Length: 67
Image 1 (cartoon, rainbow, N blue to C red):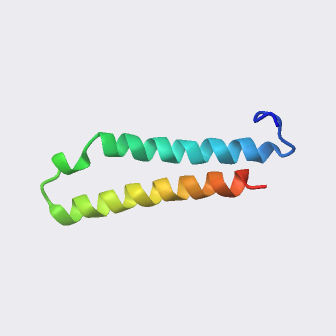
Image 2 (image 1 turned 180 degrees about the horizontal axis):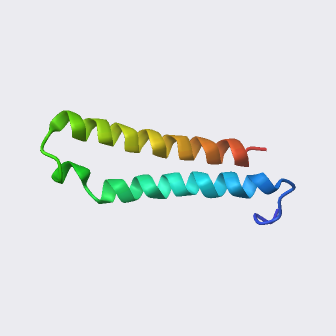
């Protein structure tokens, strides 16, 4: 099956948004946010938010692409 041919136009949008969330989370982790803020609870909260946003992106892609 061709990956670009879909029956639903929103499938492409769902995959694009999920990929954007994943890439944004990876970019945030690559930026090492724990080096810019010495306050440990703030760093932990930010890291939890990044991981949760990546999880939402992965689940969105999984929901859209499952058959």
